[in-house]
Image 1 (cartoon, rainbow, N blue to C red):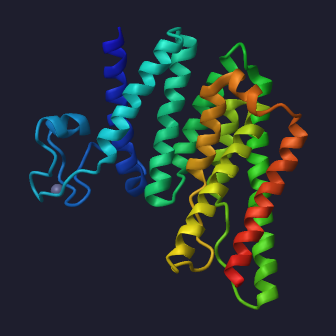
Image 2 (image 1 turned 180 degrees about the vertical axis):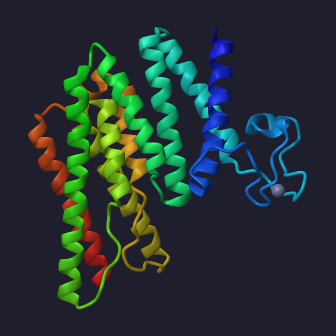
Amino acid sequence: MEILVSLLGLGVGGLVNALADSLPTSRKFEKPRCPACTAPRPLSSWLGVVALLSNNWRCPYCDTPRLWRTPLIEIVMMAGSLWLFSTDPHRTFFWPGFLILSIFLLITIIDIEHRLILHVVTGPSALLIGLLGVLDPERGFQKTSVGGVVGFGVVLGLYLLGGVFARLIARLRGQVLDEVAFGFGDVTLAGVLGLSVGYPGILLALFLGILAAGEYSLVHILFMLSRRMYKAFVPIPYGPFLILGASIVYFGGRPLVDRIFPFGPLWFFILLVATFAVIYVWERQRETN
Ligand SMILES: [Zn+2]
């Protein structure tokens, strides 16, 4: 059974790679192609792991090597599906977890590689994940839908706040700023994450995600400063960090959540806004100096 589960992970990992390659350009699924010369890949190199082991790593037409992402994602999917199966092989646990893992990985890859969160991914994901949440006896309609609305609403608020803040700074300095911290894709993503972890889990997920993103940009700024390369406000992709937060809540489950989340939801909301404000103001200030 474990062999079947890991083969499933490998296959779906290959599917996630193919979707991550084709969706950003054509918005639809296409069979695996070489990104450099667009020649269709032979069947023997559809999967990154197989291509690596069978010495088909480079494109036979233009000799361009594959992205290391392809075998990596397949291995992560294999390990993830084995972990899910060994935690609880029951189908009401395994399949939702498997689906959410695949979707989270797909969104992460596309956001890192293209700085894009595609509606063609978040739309169907919201439907599927929402349906699974409603059917889950431990979650139900209310927790799932409130989670989706709160996720969408909180990040929409931060998105609008960021826009107001950017305009305010722009007016004070008499010049136009076109970067915003959150894109609208992050707003729809937060809705999907809310549907997957429900309420109140989404508050913790967002908090952890924004905290992680803040730490990342702090390290990034320090690194750039140390090399005297720091210039202006560099927008970072928030998607992968929001997904990280939601993954901790979803896959870590109740025990992990209780350990990090001993206060009420209101406190978390206040902390969330405060953290975001500190990071945002700090970055803006660095920019003006
Ligand atoms: Zn090629």
